[in-house]
Amino acid sequence: MIKTTNLQKMFTTDEVETTALNGLDFEIKDGEFVAIMGPSGCGKSTLLNILGLLDNPTEGSYNFYGTEVGGMSERQRAQLRKGNIGFVFQSFNLIDELTVFENVELPLLYLKIPSAERKEKVEAALDRMNMMHRRNHFPQQLSGGQQQRVAIARAVVAKPKLILADEPTGNLDSANGEDVMKLLQELNQEGTTIAMVTHSPYDSGFAHRTVNLFDGKIVTENFHV
Image (cartoon, rainbow, N blue to C red; front, side, top):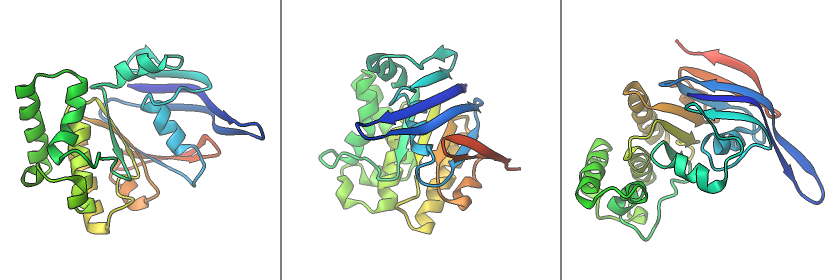
């Protein structure tokens, strides 16, 4: 599903050149759940941004479902991202001015899905996350755990092939964090591929394997039974 070869990403300012990814060879199979770990600054978020088609590598190849995307324009990347990739962030990234329903509906608006079908899909996603009773609330009226449930509903409403999660439990207490991890595990068991950046060894235990990065390279890989 995903394959990177010799992936490199450099960030250059007037003063300094920083290597975030250094010749990374990485693969995720269809239906896998992969945790990406490592110390701050090791390249985890940079890798997730490239996998999510939010950024291009400086060098190397990135193949997404048979399409080479390493040198695509922003417009091409945005087109491929729609409907194929869902995102779950540590800070939820919900839009405060929109209701829960409207936040979850957004990806479907971008896909130009008709109104009646949108309503059906949004209600199904909210029902799945036990958030239908909050459909007319605004994000600030919700707890952190509820906001993350809404964010997951938004990520899955278009039934993407891939979900990218960046520290999805980072702002949650342990009980809410466990709920979120179980939801991601369920989605994966139903066939959604998941790549998750985490600092939590506990959270990484929900994945099929853990990839450890250091200085922009994979240093170890652990498979979970």
